Length: 288
Image (tube, rainbow, N blue to C red; front, side, top):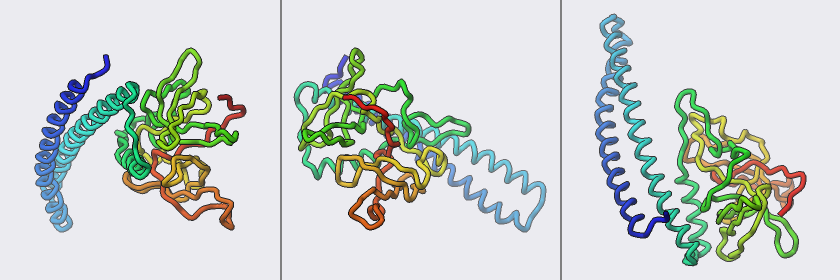
């Protein structure tokens, strides 16, 4: 059953209270861990001169305590992030309901560009545990072949203009019609206000999670890879080459867009968030 505005607000408030509690627990845990870390650093410095077995045993004990502390702190942080994602999902569900009811909010272009930037920056970050497999739609990992994007999901959509020119645009899924195996998507650009009915072959789901370069670099496109990337301050995807990879979770790809107006055929380096860099769709034959 769709949530009413009151139900959605109550659910958000409930999760915000839980989130506040978790943040307080994280801070308490961090302060407690800090004491142990300071002791480890102090004894490590002493151990450079004192090689006694007793000191080494004490250091090993502190390391074990520090490891358990880190595991506990990580668990709390993951719980907090899950609450944040719950809140995002509830709000997105309400937004979709309002759109379906004909109450779609008009967003000015400048605000849209800012919204897209914030959406990319706050996309959930996947940090794998030892031995954990990187899921589909994390960083450069594509969707499973049977995957169906959900209403409200962002996708790259290959659409044809009135002049017959085909372009990859940023779009939002309205619905997937299983009987026809086609998507209904809205152009994210409010100035266009276009709805398109497209086959699955014309749709590329965008990542649902960012990859952490420090733990899951294999989920990033290698340098020199030809990709499709959202050109900054636009809602269209164009071919580009990965010039530099992000080194931290908050950094973006540095890409070179194909551009015949430059002598070497490529634009100067530009930065594009992980969410808007996808593999090139190879279609032998594309139908609408």
